[in-house]
Length: 268
Image (cartoon, rainbow, N blue to C red):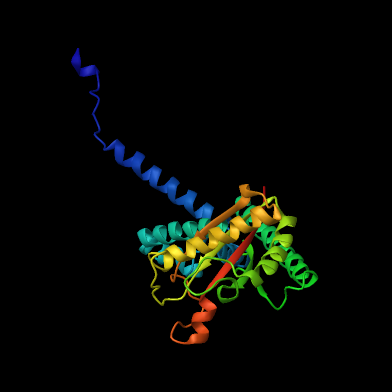
């Protein structure tokens, strides 16, 4: 019974090897096909590299930046440089931004203040000439353009060590008061100054007291005799603290003995 049947012989093969070989052949053919189909335009590639280099500060090695070039071999450094580049771009953008509007406003205010004070100075100079005071007073403008100052010699106004106004100086003070009447809406400061020679009398303790007394005397004279508004008239003294000349000479000490009247440019 068994003799009529042919026994089947089992053939053992490594099937996975055949499949793997077929896969490798297919991949090889695929890459060969891709290579054959590729056509690199070197001119366009060079333009791309140049554009990227100019715009982002990368690919600085040109074609060498691909593969083992600088971008790949020093990737961390390139990233740091790129970060620095964008930081610099941000700083440049900030510097190109328009100036703070408040700063521009302040500049305009300072310019307007300067112009206003210069106009005030011209007016006061004209009024001193109209009142024939050009030889009796000095008119100046401060560096900060805050006020115009009329300076009178203390030797002309007062006796030495005294705050009593000389009789001959009263007409000069009245003419100055006529100028100040035109600026009744402005703050006016009357300041007394002395030299550094100590006073020796029982009426005033020192030069500071004397300078204050002289400023107050001038203020009271103008209010009482010329009807200036007390509201805007201030009186103060600085003694010998703010000399304008050398106290080592008689001429310098004479300049330091003075009364300054400051007319501020700001109105009420």
